[in-house]
Image 1 (tube, helix red, strand yellow):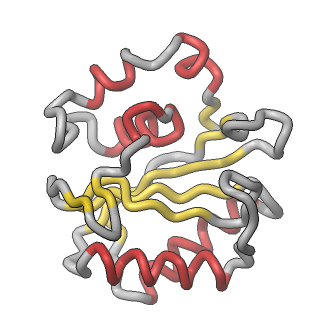
Image 2: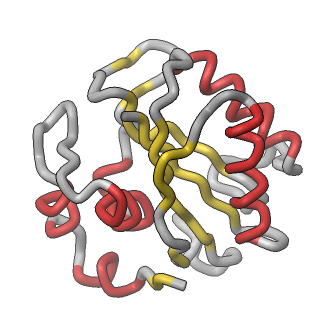
Length: 158
């Protein structure tokens, strides 16, 4: 299975996420499951607009580098502009995990910071409670419990 994070913190955030899902489907990336919507403070600057994030599950066989190209085109189509790292954006699409593979070349999978991010782990747990990190073999539950209490309590299911 392939797990994809989708987030937005500008404009109609939920609509932006739903459009991203639509464009993924148009590009042959079938979505099998989708988590609920989760709202979090913007990271690393909580004064920026809050994010809404989801994680979706796909059975796509599109190779990771081609998938990355498709994701970037979708982000651009939805109005993501090139700005400073971690700046607000209408759409952000990340490959969280790809068929239990460990890849590090022009793309790093699993996503290198995913195990520290509540907005990835909690929605991922919702749709894949038995998922294990391909590199560390830690369960999703253990990864969530390794978050700070603040990270666990500050995320809001909406």
